[in-house]
Length: 383
Length: 247
Image 1: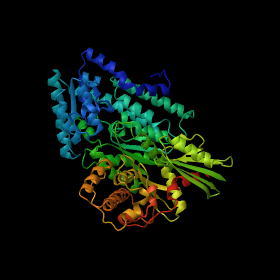
Image 2 (image 1 turned 45 degrees about the horizontal axis):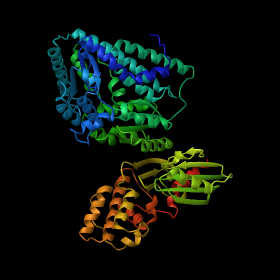
Image 3 (image 1 turned 180 degrees about the vertical axis):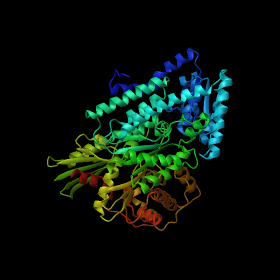
Image 4 (image 1 turned 135 degrees about the vertical axis):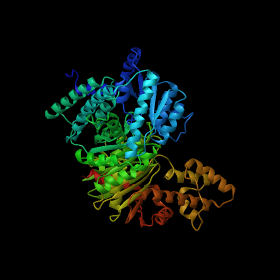
């Protein structure tokens, strides 16, 4: 694939991708394509994709609708949950508006309780997610995936074949490989680009509906970055930061901006939307495709798992592979699971790797930008 | 080499002039609603063409264009505190609008730090507000609470503490007991906050409240570690800035 634009323009486009997809989804809808709105990365997107549905992420990341949400939900609740509920309630998000079915999973307490009341405005289906990655857990999730497939078949009057699921799996795996190649470039030292640009690409890619074209584009971008790097176009040497914790795109990306405005570079995002939810491929060679999907998805190391060993295994790998100088753990306000787990991450980073560690609690407001900048500047002065 | 460090804090603005590692001049002004003017006043009083480098720090550090560098108050406080008291291993700073705990390594470099900057509870603002409600000047606090028994204060929210004070006064509790109760509340909170890091050895206590012995003593009680202060501890940030300017 030939890229017509240069990299800064492409990054800018990805940053705007979510908005640009408003029209795309309207188009899909007008062409009679069913739209399935999803929240978590635990949802096997291959199943709705197999029936030709448009799959769109609904996790909302702006404080715009939080006051509306707080009319129903407690104030002391995670901003992502409030924001998502608020967008559904006010119909301000076109992705919610066009979704024929909204699918959640029993992840954190806040989300699963919110889904009960979200059902007042939207057709909601909740998949039951096990609490841990045990043999029983994989088996249960396999059954849940089959159940979810039946729900789709009944709701949309279609039949989803194994062949279709395998085809969708192949395409999603291609996209994963392309994303991995792209973020893997950040292993280069000095880093080829800002973490903010990478984050925009990772987030924007989730809002591209043609996954085959998207994978091709991502490959072309990675090639371009590599080529420019070899010509000497890259960042100056900066302290290399790993960011982990709650989802970091949207309003919470103020943390990434504060790190990079103060002289650091985020070389890897372990968060949802980053390595955590992209890294592992679905085993296409498994004769039981449902088992392959159950394993791949349930393996995601989110703090709603207890215990959550996969997050720590992944962090260990990433700290080494990306030659990380320090780790910043971001928990959204009142995100209990990530907030609690922060002590475990601190121990891993400081005791096993003897690296500087910072934990931050963030909301979606812009009121703490000043303090955030001071903290980040001091943290980077320390490195 | 002559350097100038300016620390623009939320309550006071401090300036320190140094020559070859010696303090030759220093001054402090209240920070007004226009912090840039307080900075300008300090700058005009301390600057001369002999000054080689200027470093600014504190919340208003971006407001002075003459600064050669802007460094955060965390790094500056650590450097300044270690200059005032060489053997310290950590700094606890209770400022006007936040509270910081800084851990130092053997080279006086920042190893780790914590900041409470989300609300006024546990900051100098809390004490200022309390003393205003009790109608006692902050300067008299040591004498005011001498030999008192601390009243039990449950609320640490600056807004709710005020109503708690009002109800304690209505119960005819001695104002000195209430004030001491508040001091215990803030020191206990600060100690719990700082102990999230592995504290050990000697602690340097800075910020406006460090001027009053009762805070040092109570903090020591809750930390169970020796707490030191210095008559110039309020200048720690500006001293650190002037020292960093020398490099």
